[in-house]
Length: 63
Image (cartoon, rainbow, N blue to C red; front, side, top):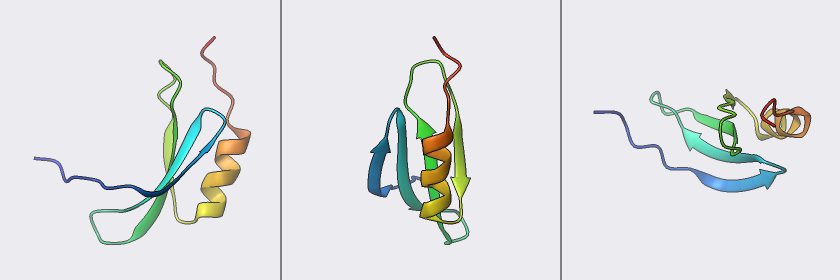
């Protein structure tokens, strides 16, 4: 059964949502996820600043 991921410090920049969570090793990570239907882009970052930069520069290819 997969581990339950609890996000905190949620923020939204355009269609991208950023949240802080702990990975399975107990390290704090920041995830950036595009909420547009059909996009499917997401990535984990070690800092909130990197996640915010990725959110600002993300361009959806979904029309």
